[in-house]
Amino acid sequence: MTATNDERFAHSAFLRARGTAQEGKVGFAELFFDLVFVLTIIQLSHSLAGHYSALGLVEAAMLTLAVWWVWIYTTWATNWLDPDKAPVRILLFVLMFLGLMLSVAIPVAFSTGGLLFALTYVAMQVGRSAFTAYVMRRDWPENSRNFIRITAWSAFAAVFWIAGAFVEEEARLALWLLALIIEYSAPALGFVTPGIGRSSVSDWQVSGEHISERCALFVIICLGETILVTGRTVAGMELLDGFTIILLATAFFSTATMWWIYFRFGHGEAAHLIEHSATPGRVARLAFTYAHIPIVGGIILSAVAEEFALAHPHGHVDFKTASAILGGPIVFLSGNTWFKRAVRGRAPLSHLAGIGALLALAAAVPFVEPYQLFMAASAVLFGVALWEFQSLKSTRADAVAKV
Image (tube, rainbow, N blue to C red):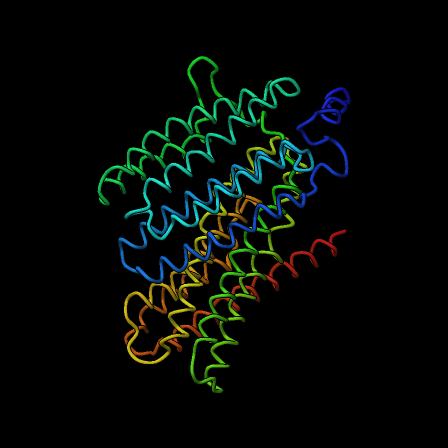
């Protein structure tokens, strides 16, 4: 980025100043915007817990993908737009209200609320991208063209989102799946658009500090939901005995371990890599836009597992309880494996072993009670964190010794 460009951005009515200490700062308006996604994550986990089945899992996964896409696209936009500028702040407030409507529609998205969900989602995706393209047209025409491409792809997908709202559940599922395929394949295809071509990874000059902190805050929101589920479930119990306290401690311990795995062993490295990469957009797209999807999904599924284990700790372990208790950590570790491989160039052995151990626990399902399976899964997570801690500690000691 040249000095001329830096000065041009510094005087823009919409864009962040580039090349300054404030470039990667997360604004208070962005934090305020995130508040609505607290409700969104709660709605997703509650809907999944209340309709836990093969179809319910597919529907919850699709809604999670849609919600994540809204949030991550807004994060990319505010990587360049300055939330401290009034027009951008107003945009975030409008998106926040629309996000509230989106959250309200989640429990009934595949029944009576399909049109509300589709229209709100489309308004957020198309509206934000069109706004960004418009305000960048003078100060950053190259990136404005990128957002014109994004707007075109979002409008194309919008046809299937809205069409799906007018048909029955099975057909809606198919049309919305097609819409998601369009949206998720667009970045990999460079948002190729007739007349203006495609973008390249060199076009996407992002702040690693900003995008990593924004994604970290979203992970915090998801982890916070697991704590809310734990507290709400235990608070609703008539008897709070020692056994319940032990289960409560296990649930909290599991959430804290997920925090440790994500924040202690990867988040900071990713921000540093983006800041020093020749193609920061490529790294950010892989490590944050895509790899964080299973991280978020795994945490949401873990929240459902905690609700199942706390509400019904004894008796036979049915399929839904086992799949949630084991599936949540497996999906979470898979996402972290993807994330850390994108950052380090190799998959952490501790995570692969942890996934294998969780899959092996499936053989014990007929012989244990829900609370026992839940404790075993929590122990595996802790083992993964401890293994990675020791592994990285040894690696750093070896590096120091060589110096």
